[in-house]
Each structure stands twice: as structure tokens, then as C-alpha cells.
Amino acid sequence: SQKIEQNSEALNIQEGKTATLTCNYTNYSPAYLQWYRQDPGRGPVFLLLIRENEKEKRKERLKVTFDTTLKQSLFHITASQPADSATYLCALDTGGGNKLTFGTGTQLKVEL
Amino acid sequence: NAGVTQTPKFQVLKTGQSMTLQCAQDMNHEYMSWYRQDPGMGLRLIHYSVGAGITDQGEVPNGYNVSRSTTEDFPLRLLSAAPSQTSVYFCASSIGTGREKLFFGSGTQLSVL
Image (cartoon, rainbow over all chains, first blue to last red; front, side, top):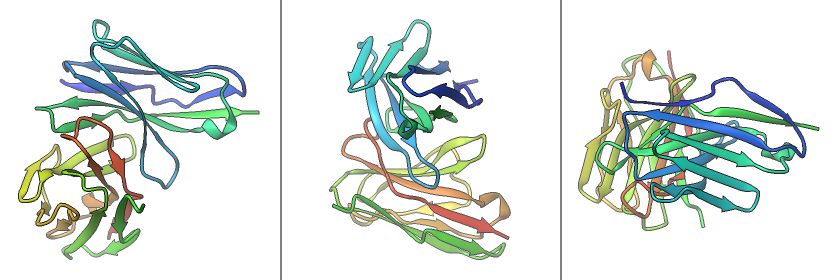
């Protein structure tokens, strides 16, 4: 079956360290992969989009990689801060181009 | 700039009641969509629209109706509420086809008793 997997267990890291979150997918061939941040009680907020022909994308302390052979994306936050604590969702375009399918998200907690 | 506005923020219904969740965007986006978010299930697409007068089904459309009479508005109607429709509902819009950056509203928390 088609699915998008993110680590359901929360990730706890110390402030200043690099957080790495994983998104794995099967049976899709997405043209785009996106990452969103969601805070409790709020809607998701777009962070980064990476295309299938791009290996890596950066934005300030954020870096995303996209390996279409492994069917995996890695999302890195360098020099993490407590304010980075949130749930991070990956999303792929699926099903004919007008549908964005989301993973279940990984909760990140950055501790002092 | 308001972005995507959803109303109400909270709603409690009894089984069998009907209601409409409102969604409006002021960014002139052609694409709009409705998702529901449940614990452990992530965001699931209910219905989407690529422009006024055009709607299509997503992954979980049963029990919901939509219409798109204007570019700005995309209401979601629950025809006869069921406890299985207890969820948080998000409306989202995009300037493109829906594969690119989505702008989300703040959500409606719905409980069906």
C-alpha cells in the first residue's frame, strides 16, 4: 500500500544540537516534497519545498535532502533552540497532481 | 493580510445534526482544500477545488459536501453528523495546483456527541 512514514516517537534533543527528522515513503513518485511545522492548536505552516531533481535545499538553519532512490527525505535543524519545539510534517504530491498527502508528523522537543 | 480564515473555532453537534464549516481566503488563490486531522492518522484530504465551480473528492469524502461559488470561499457541509466526524478540520489554499506551498487556516475543532 502507499504510505508516508515519519517517526511517531518524539525526538528530544539538547539546545544547540542538530535535529534530524526522517520521512520515508513507498509506492509514490512525487515531483515535490514539502516540510511543515505545526504548533499545538494551530494550522501547519510551510517551511521548505524540494523538487525531485534537487538533492538538497537550505533556508537559514533548516536543511532538507531528498533521495528519490531511497524514497527518503531528511529534515535538519542546526543549532536547535527551544522555540523549534513543534511537530514537523512531511508532505508529498500524490494522486494526479492536485493532492498533497501528509505524514503523521514527528514531535520535536528541544531542551535547555 | 488575513490569509485563510476559518469559522467557527469550536463546535459541538449532536448526532444527525448538519452544519457548515466556513473557509475564506483573501490571497486570490485558485486552489482550496479541506483536511481533517485525527491522532495517529495525520492530515487526510476530504475535498479540494482548483477554481470556482470545480470541486473533487479527496481521500475521505463520505459524509461531506463542498461547493465553490467564488474564488474566496470554500465551505464544508456536514450533512448528518456522526461521532466518527469528531476531528480537527483545516482549510488550506494554494496559489498553484495544490502541489506547492499550502497556506492553512487555524482550524475548527468539532465534537459530535
